[in-house]
Amino acid sequence: AQKITQTQPGMFVQEKEAVTLDCTYDTSDPSYGLFWYKQPSSGEMIFLIYQGSYDQQNATEGRYSLNFQKARKSANLVISASQLGDSAMYFCARAGGTSYGKLTFGQGTILTVHP
Amino acid sequence: DTGVSQDPRHKITKRGQNVTFRCDPISEHNRLYWYRQTLGQGPEFLTYFQNEAQLEKSRLLSDRFSAERPKGSFSTLEIQRTEQGDSAMYLCASSLDGARNSPLHFGNGTRLTVT
Figure (cartoon, rainbow over the protein chains, first blue to last red):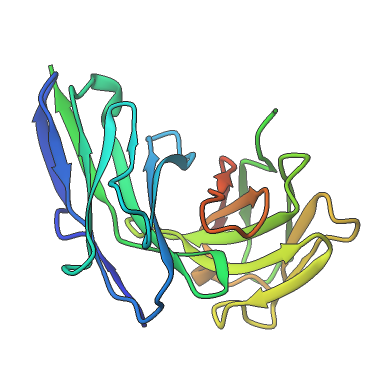
């Protein structure tokens, strides 16, 4: 199985500080996509950011950026200026091959933002 | 855009009973996905539809599970003869198409408890 690994079960950050959530992946597909989703305690999965394997630049969406290192097969999420509302579970996911909606998710990282 | 809606939000049933969940995707989205999420884990892919055609099913989807999308709009997921191991959150998602950068938009899920 082509796995997604999130090695940090939990992370803590002070409000207004930056935090990096780690994600590494396996793949044999030449073309693939990487996604990050946020899941608050209410349960909904919220799309944050996307990185394509052939994209030349790292993706950014507001306070979210993706540190994509293709050779290392890592796609770390960076959240700048953390807010209390960022406290949630964060999932890294990979799509590849012919089924781009068929995502393989990691086990997630629980982020807690302290005031 | 009212988002992806799922009904019911919670379902408690006794082992051996049949249950059916409904998902209404974002109206212009032609792809619809079902995922299952157990406590502390990332979502796992179950199946997906392109319009009314079911294009792929996971090995996780035993023959007790059936999904339909009869008119290419809403979808139902039925579980027959429920087992305690079926207890999980069932997530529905939709996307505009299967393009690599077309993110999945998830509903709030249906939490199933089998007693």
